[in-house]
Length: 607
Image 1 (cartoon, rainbow, N blue to C red):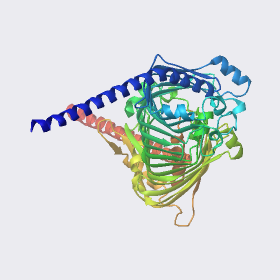
Image 2: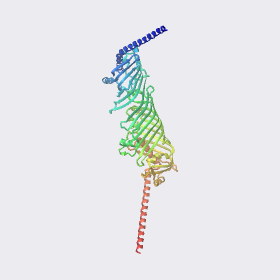
Image 3: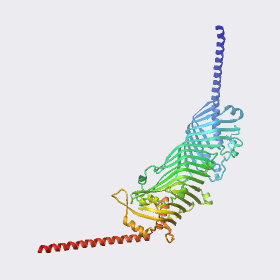
Image 4: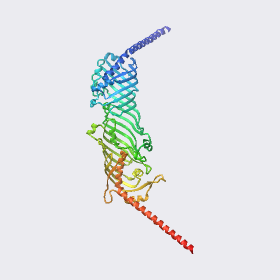
């Protein structure tokens, strides 16, 4: 039995020894190749970058480690910089790119670079290159000679590498947790935009004899994927936070998706204007399920122009509030602050051919210092379409009008169809708005008429409200047709001794009797159409202009005209005069009675 075991034991030892020797030999060969391949890899990386960028960029790093068995390499303390002398020369030759980059990072990882393929076939193929937490500085300067240039390199990098390589390919280049800073050098004032935690993946970079002319590629790439999980930015005036949640973009489809965008005020409604130091509107905006289709990434990269065919927004809200207790004399001047005017002031050029809006709630609130209450008007479940949203001069020269068609529900009940036409080239911000508000119970308006107009609607049915206005920075002129019946109101006042508004009894009776038209058209089928000429204060906002011009038309239609208000004031003055005369006569009668009583008392005393 021992004789049988001994040969088996020797065989196992021989096999084990053979394996150890083999591994040792492989390790020695790997070490030798690693050491020998480092200079070659280092030289290839530097040469490839320098030549493929038309001698513009150079790369430096402190250390290279390689592993031939895994086909990987790591570069430490990497810096990619542009040669400014060469850049000026390329400008003179009209070959310079619009963007200049500087990239710095602690570690760059190259995975699976297949050295044998490089040696045998003159093909350098790399599975993956990882830029770990890079800091990217991009400076943009627009050159006329790059205008209308196709999204491809001026000269193929293949001409620079063909002496050493037949093909250079990287399947994926990943920028992980990148810090990105963009500097706009096209304006006099320094304009810097920064963002962190950005993930960018460049798919299938190919340099060969045909890739530069491949129509399915842009800048030699098959695709670009951009991801951003959470982003927050405080505006320069420190009044708002801008928040972005989960952004995804794929260049091959031109589709971008954002889960949520928010413009969040940093102070509450009443404190906001106090901190700002002047009367100003407070905005709170939140939009969900944002999508954009047909984004032209090459145009954005070369010209910083955001062009998209279509944009969609599903669910969200826009809340605007104005603290009326702040002195309007020190208010923020809002000339040139209409939506289409602000669009023209955007730094990046924008063109979105169509925006589809669905189920967005819009509210405009005001605090009235006279009533000491907040009034809000809301437009709920707003849906519609924006067309030709742009600030590009070339597009405006062809079509200078941005059109907006919306359907919404006033205070959640009355259906409202409204259309806007914004003149994108008008220096005074000209625009038009017209629409139809359909049947509703007028009492729903109390949440806005009581706190802001000190008028309570006791009853009333609205058949239809039509309006058609033309407006600009100075105000709005137009027509309001208000169809209603069974209208009765009560005028209110603030009672400091109570917590609520109280009815002004006699004045309300006079208003309903002498001032208010209870129906329009009246029983004689006579209809009152209101012509409105509203002068906009410099500190008044876009929302305020729309609301107050309509409110003026409604007041005129129901009879609260300046003439009738003067008439009722005269009646009130006459009534007060009658009251005063009555009190004087009453005091005189009392005085005469007291004199007679004293005279009688004196006569009785003399007797």
